Picture 1 (cartoon, rainbow, N blue to C red):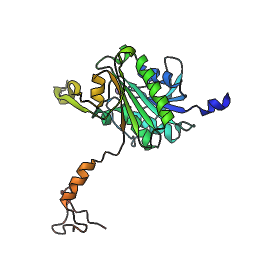
Picture 2 (tube, protein in one colour; picture 1 turned 30 degrees about the vertical axis):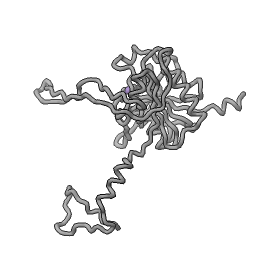
Picture 3 (cartoon, protein in one colour; picture 1 turned 90 degrees about the vertical axis):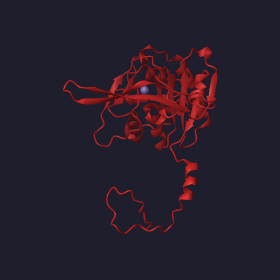
Length: 286
Ligand code: MN
């Protein structure tokens, strides 16, 4: 059945917990049941590293052997760099779908732009390839003490469905799975982003040389478990799927700005001369 084999989708698997993380292996194994898998993942943990484009240093790529003896590629770049590397030519074959995870912590509400897991999927849609981020709400469990079996099965189900239905261009899916036994998961809900509540505190300490340094510490974030949101879904034992787009324009605010009444030919203030850093509105139309 060679013709069938060539039709198998080519899935790029990446993550932000690093190439050695157990969640990556679980995801890769689940994806191999859906398509042909290539792995390009960061060589270290980039959790909270956000959407990165590395421009000021070279990126190195190495082979890495996963715990099931399969081969992955890893780079010293961020998860989004790994996706860019893969899609811009590191992999000879065209990628059909990018799947990122399985992250060892939930990525809910405002987490999405901090998250290396989600921003890897964001990078995919920049290059016109659909992306799916999968996170498991392990709370504060250590990644090596977590069971990814159920989350991997759910990822497989969602990826199959996404390939069937074809995601719209420019849309990525942010999937979060509650840390529950399979028979206690109540289902899958389509959701919007909820409101994360961050409880960060700045810790000021002194290094051995007597100089101050700072650490962003505090407590684990919580969130408002509103109905219809990702946070609400997880709180009730559901898997959440939030479709995201990179157009962050606040459309209602755009309408509000109409009341600022910029004149089309609003003149640049000519005197006094514009100085650097002045809060200038001197964007004279051409
Ligand atoms: Mn992570």
